[in-house]
Length: 483
RNA sequence: GGCCUCGUCGUCUAGUCUGGUCCAGGACGCCAGGUUUUCAUCCUGGUAACACGGGUUCGAAUCCCGUCGAGGCUGCCA
Image (cartoon, rainbow, N blue to C red; front, side, top):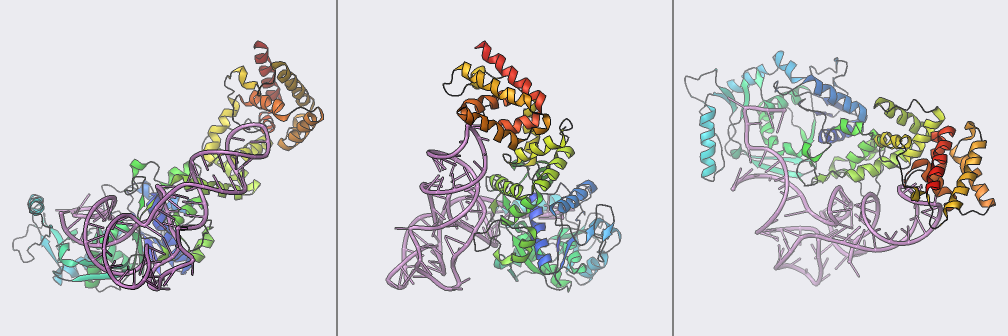
């Protein structure tokens, strides 16, 4: 049974790139009926925070791809392979015997060379135009253990090769690795060592991670082999890029899952978009539910080159998902979003709120836009009276039309304010009197919205309610008189 | 600089393994037209790419070589 994992370090909120890596891992685990594990790599205590760990877990949950094992939101740990935080593993001395083993077998050694000396050598190599390959002295006497770190003795001439699921055959020359640092001391492993030990101890079988780890792979394979652990399969997925084709980062704008959540994107749309970023079936299909993705996903069909994050495409997908929602679901989710994000819609009756959400969902990309759009309904900003005019229709005619419609709106009860009813009733009268629609409906719409572009007057009237609707029409009438 | 990886429309991509059916298909975007009281939606149409140069071959987006370009890594971070 395959076991896969993501191993983020909690040094920031859940990044879009991490989310996609998580998705691919989750898809593979679900499809192969394996396990998806979350391990928190918080060995860098200076930069790691519990708050970020929580955000990562919440983000995964919101996306609908929660881990099977790992720390939970409640602070509990789930799974048989814990602890799932490296900081805790360190406290328990998990790494010590392995570092000891490496030291005893001669694969690792203490090195107390100062940073200054290292920097000097690095600079020297750089100036000479040669690669910096550090070799320490494994047999040095009088080691200053306070200062020393533990280095791995990389073989001098070994070809390291593996078959990557997405990249095919990848080869590295071990000579260029140099003796890299694997631990600060006997209890404090660094990334490359900790990963190997934890992956082995957690029985991880497949490592699906970002391409930025490609050059770490030979180091980890070496350690893995020396420690006698089972071989892993690798899949290095391409990076998500910003508009300028460099690795997606903060300077590119919204890059965290929570930011998209707050903007009101649907998690299913997000998942669909992320999946399409670097993965595709040979057919033209683009819309997949998470369940469908599980069925058809193949690691081998992951793209080799990086993919630019295109928010227009995300918006388009979100709109499609919005439309696919039933009226009831749309109302529920929209309402929930508005309330959670502090938009005050209390003044609206449920009927009005339903119409509002329904109307807005036809014209926005994300729930977040409903809030700002809603405000515009209530704030009737002053508008030029000419705006009320439809083509060359005389002011008197416009005014008469408004009177006619106002009369109808006056007569009917609040309960009959409904977009469809209003539309059929008002249009019927216009037809009867042979009034061109634009001549009457354009002024009415402007009267109600004050804007050149807005939802239909029937929809606005329903959302505003009878009283406000009539008030706005008489306001328009006054404007017309001034002309 | 060194190592590794990648290179099809503006963007995501199909096609590359198993050369011809590809003067390269789809989607998003953009542009134009239509429907509509406006916007949006919807419908129709259009725009636009095999990085470059050699080679192999009857024939190359597809195979080989080189060049150029882009990205990642190059930490006692992960």
